[in-house]
View 1 (tube, rainbow, N blue to C red):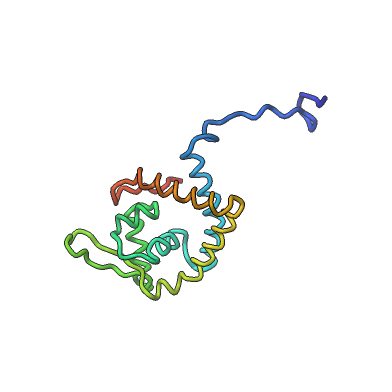
View 2 (cartoon, rainbow, N blue to C red):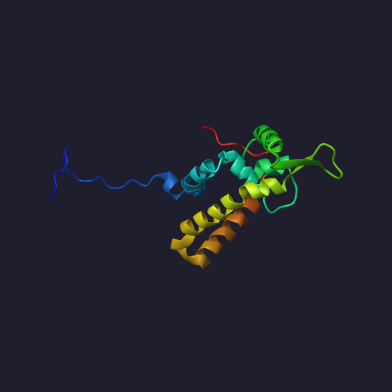
Length: 167
């Protein structure tokens, strides 16, 4: 029987059951952080900050959306998104458009140049996603994504209420 005192042969303590080990928000946050950080290194290697990558990925393949909606999708505070958009607009990656019926709302869309700048990175993101989901099989992976989309739809806040994670 192994020794129970201090030293290299002491018996391992029984594993504790932490609250966060079975709490959905904590599990989602941990999984997101781990998986995202793997890909964020790739985004930075391709000249995009994490926030710029999130903006570009959110705008790619969609119609123009409001800055508030973009802030919500990217999980970023609206003033931060506005500053990002200033830089990205100066580089010709995005453009701002007036809303048809509400002068208070500014819409944003990715430009052709922006799409070209991020195309290869999106392919790499899809490959990364496949590697992450491969152990679960296609059916389970699709069910997970459907479930997450449903959770998001049920709990989405009004645009502009996105809260950026604090460090």
